[in-house]
Length: 387
Ligand SMILES: Cc1cc2nc3c(=O)[nH]c(=O)nc-3n(C[C@H](O)[C@H](O)[C@H](O)COP(=O)(O)OP(=O)(O)OC[C@H]3O[C@@H](n4cnc5c(N)ncnc54)[C@H](O)[C@@H]3O)c2cc1C
Image (cartoon, rainbow, N blue to C red; front, side):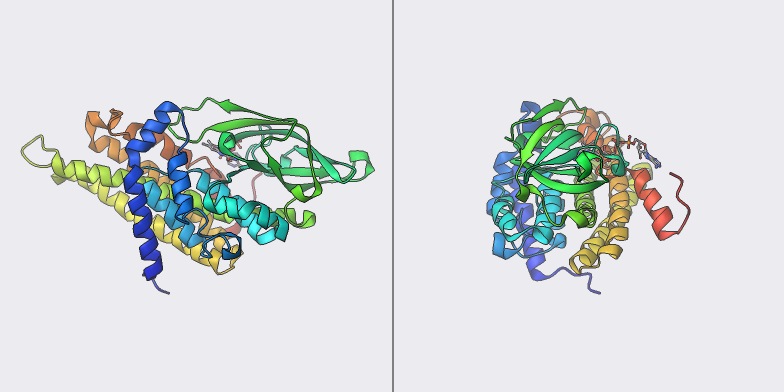
């Protein structure tokens, strides 16, 4: 076991931090205010090879693993310019296509996902199914060799920027659609006739928006189905560990950003003749954040290392635990940063009040805190299932 990053990983960390420092919070805030996506940063990150660092070299990627991709998102997030779509496009969709797609599907999607010129969103959540993904009703039926996909998805991120959405649906097989429904993964281009989407007004200051999707007999060719139809559930789960590792990276970066802002302020601000950081009422909560941040980061790195070694099951437990710990520390860090800055904690100039809501998302998405606790209670502790 080695807790030191390789020279390549350290160099990657420095290079991403440098990119992040050139954009940072001021850039993100201006994009949030104007309602525009962070295309400049996204495309530059892609050009530098950061977005596809986990994808195979043969398809334009960097040949690294989830460790490296998480490192990229952590550094951008710590610089105040986190990229939500990294959780989705290269991590979930890129991974699923790289691991289970045909050569033609890899050629079609991976080079663009790697250099950022193609963005693929991911749609699993449905209004009526919620956390219970087994209840999804988006259904594809056969029409000759094509598929006709119909249904609704909710809270899907970044659809306005996306070239395609990886839709988790079900196949109505045989018996005129009365057969057993099976999950299937479809790469659905966003310009498909019959597909519409509508932005959901959200109370979070994020550059990527969330959407309600409507699919009404969207015609898809046979090669829109990613991977083996009969193993779609296993393939889906293979994409969910990267999702949780990347959600951890985003939260760890937010916590680092908030802690850094708070510590700097606590060293400089003086109201009783000494820096406010000398008061234990402020210093101890910041020290607690530092400890919990390092714990969460270590668990995230363990999850990524296990995943890259191919230990999917062990990675699953670590990824859930990392996601839980990272979301918790991001909330604690941003809350304590707001407290440390006093009135300035709510001023747009510092951006911490808005970051608190963003950090809070980590407790709900991509998997809620309670569903992680259910997983740990049942899988790690062997306790009975309550639902
Ligand atoms: C900013 C943002 C971005 C998102 N991006 C995407 C995306 O790109 N693609 C996508 O598909 N989805 C996306 N989502 C959706 C997200 O994954 C879901 O919101 C999340 O999984 C929770 O589902 P839900 O909102 O339906 O809540 P519900 O399932 O209705 O849950 C509501 C509450 O009940 C709790 N609960 C539910 N079941 C149990 C149980 N068995 N035991 C204990 N508590 C329970 C939950 O933990 C939660 O606190 C996004 C959401 C947000 C907020």
